[in-house]
Amino acid sequence: MTRLAVTRALRSVPRATILSRPQLPRTPSFRNRAPPSLANYTRNLSVTARRLNDDEDERKWSTPLAKQLAEAITATGPVPLASFMRMCLTGDIGGYYTGAIEKSEQNRDQFGVQGDFVTSPEISQVFGELCGLWYVTEWLAQGRPSKGVELIEVGPGRGTLMDDMLRTIQNFPEMAKSIDAVYMVEASPQLRIAQKNLLCGEDAAMSESKVGYHSHCKYGNIPIVWTETIKSIPYDPEKTPFIMAHEFFDALPIHAFQLVEVPPSDPSPPSSIATITTSGPKGQSKKPTTTGPTLEWRELLVSPTPPHSTHLTLRTPPSQNPHLTPPPDFQLTLSPSPTRHSLHLPDLSPRYRAIKSSSSSSQVPLPDGTTRAGGPGSLIEICPDAYLFASDFATRIGGSPSHPKPSGPKGAALILDYGPGDGSVPVNSLRGIRKHHLVSPFAEPGLTDLSADVDFTAVAEAATDASEGVEVHGPVEQAWLLEGMGGRERVEHLLKVGLAKRPGSSEGEEEEREKFVSDLRRSWERLVDRGPNGMGRIYKALAIVPENDGRRRPVGFGGDVVM
Image (cartoon, rainbow, N blue to C red; front, side, top):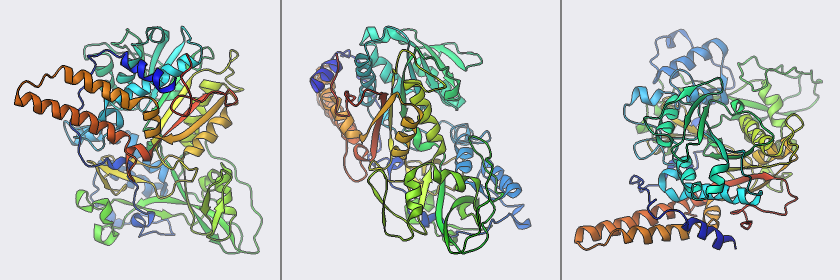
């Protein structure tokens, strides 16, 4: 009854709700393309912490944020990649999601044909409808609670996905009535307004409180609350949180590390390079003197490129389309000594420790069953913020010692993003995206989108470590999830309804019918394309649900609809 039940549910969506989406570029989205090798943007790799000299005082930087970053590095030395990414994406002065594009390029935002990338909800309404239906199936499986349901979306973009989900859920009145509130975790003031206009109407009032900003949704007058962080959403053990994270984890800042062989000597003290941590500085314990070479993780840091650099001198690879941007303002350098991050973050997982324990470049078996080249020169990327968000999701669903759920686990989280689905650790995955093209991630800070592959295994580990009340399913390919949810049947239904409204009695009308069919089918095929760079293959889905000893798998992950 899996696909049949889902298909019937989709057919209950009103016949008139065929939404138009803008014509999309025929070229594939570059946001889910593999980035160039790390060597391509670290050709000038330095083992010393380079400082700005007097000649650079008059240097012209590509953006105001680039100048601010350079001044900070002048005062502190090279900064972690995570700090650079955080400033570029959400910095107060010209961050990518906090005003840089609006100030420099009028009438353009990050999303859509005129922006930098196109996301799945912008490609087809079917994507959002299937996501909304996925939460309906979880609501059904968890006993149809009559109240206390919370819809939470992190990184909601322009609000298109939530709009499609809420419209779909309205076709299940009992669930729609059970929703107490919708929470949108959004740091950008501009995107908050766009979301409010779409979900509530341009004339809808928005008030402010200590929690965030408030309005009411056009669907059933449901309260909507915007918060800047997920921690602002209250923990309530009696609530049923349904959490959506679509293309969110890929934008979280990462740290990058390289394994180096250190000659026998007294251990190097931690570097004084500026760091930004989530839990504050930690004390260091003195290591014993070594008598032979040892392996240490060293952090890759961000520093300015030399003055008067060009794409030619920096060897910007053709894959980063150097003709589209000025020469990069920054580059990666290798820390000459351990940093606080390099001493602690690679100890978070036995997968990282296994790579370090190997003394050669041969394939190392990891605890999750995958293999990976180890030894000197090995690279890894770690995202501490991913641990924090996955832990928060799991705690809200399954509870924890500090946040118990006496009535038992309830809720679910659906994470859709791109990254390796085989348990391997991401490497060399930082990418810059500008107007649907790959560019250097260190060019035009604030105007260039930055993203990195998601370590789904790390997300799963963080969730199960945070709460004994949850279990994790996946990752599965996006195509598997969407087709398993009855997406192809939904597309055929929309075609039938749409063609019935287009009689095709004239030549112009017949052309319109053909275009309608072509656009709808092409958008669906793009979502489930299993080609080498296809969205259906590269994008993965991960589900966090209440722990039940594996007796019930979620729909789309091999499970059935539970009525």
